[in-house]
Length: 237
Image (tube, rainbow, N blue to C red; front, side, top):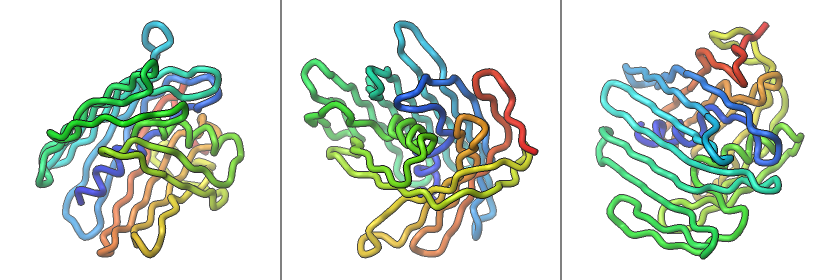
């Protein structure tokens, strides 16, 4: 269950792109866990700030837990440039707090993960656990069939891989939406977990659904409730 909430934080409401102009958005979701008598809600938004800085925020809550995640970033010559990353979770067992600063003049990311110090060398293109979502969004919109990202994860750099499965219609509270279906690629010898995502073709490839099945068989689904992209309300057929 904790993994479910964490992955929801990592992949909800993917907006515009790493290379295209970013579009401000807001979206709310319902989250349902099979085998568990509980549901939750989540909200995510992307807003333009001063001096070309964008603010990407996420909040999720359920009966026994809550979490928040935020990033600041810029786009420089078609490359996503994370500036700060903050994450906080309470409930669901152990609490967690992460604070990172990306210093591109020294090419180091520094900060803390729980109470452990973080200091890693970084190169152009390295992303945090929120801004990589924008890169994925752009690549799906650009028609790529497989994607790979270097992401700061704890005190190391990890590789996140994805592949496109095809097109599919998704029934949401905002209507029937044409979507691109994508799955996260994992080494089956390392993890049996499966994750599938659906992105709206006509709404800047906003995430409309996420489904994850854990190694123990527990399944959860996140579904779009309502949203806006560049000020326009998301509506399906």
